[in-house]
Image (cartoon, rainbow, N blue to C red; front, side):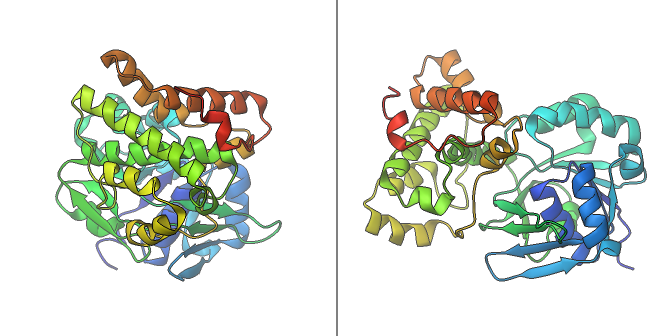
Length: 342
């Protein structure tokens, strides 16, 4: 048994990204426990899970290849590594569960959207235990009735981990989810937040991301959000790293290209397949609370503090909140509905 196989890993709050990561880690021989919702736990216990990606990888993980729990005490007891994959608004609650049930020397890794989750975890668990990280890719979940739940990585990218001793990079970097360390993880998270501003637009459109980006009108809105966000971060003195090697300003310029030129540029900028949708779209469809306050909300708070306008980000947040309250899924807005946000 290798050193990695001897380090039990619990994925705390395993949804789409958590099950994808947990499935790949289990397939690579790691000792994995998923802490997840009862309906998903039942499906994985009975059928295992599938992890696939846009590169053609497709692996079925048998039910006995990993553990699945709904009880935090059973899931967290004995874990040496805890991967936190809950939504940002559930981070404080998960931190309290980890404090109550996990070993005091377990390493805690935030694999979440947003920029403040590691700070929330550290407030409860202490600075020395918590490691920040960034997952760049999109995962789409499908659960056929009575069948094996599938978690499909629909875009590319490398998991970036706060610089440390290299053990976590080696542990978490497996085929299908390469990992690397980064010496400015905060800048990485802000760079991802800028790109994730599209989550709200995608959720409002109701379109797959490829179809949304195929429409120059939607791309123009994505670019406007990016430009607003860049201006706000500049005013706040916040660094943001390029996302997958592409600076946010370059991405915004590419989005404004005519369709034919954009398609050429997109092949160089990112790989994404036709099934990809934002996690925020999934939340609206399921009638769940979204992470809009931790994406557009961050830009809006900074904009107010520094006197910088961010009208489109404000409009997107307001429309997503309306859709949350309505609980009718994505409203399927046309792009013209947001053009007047000035």
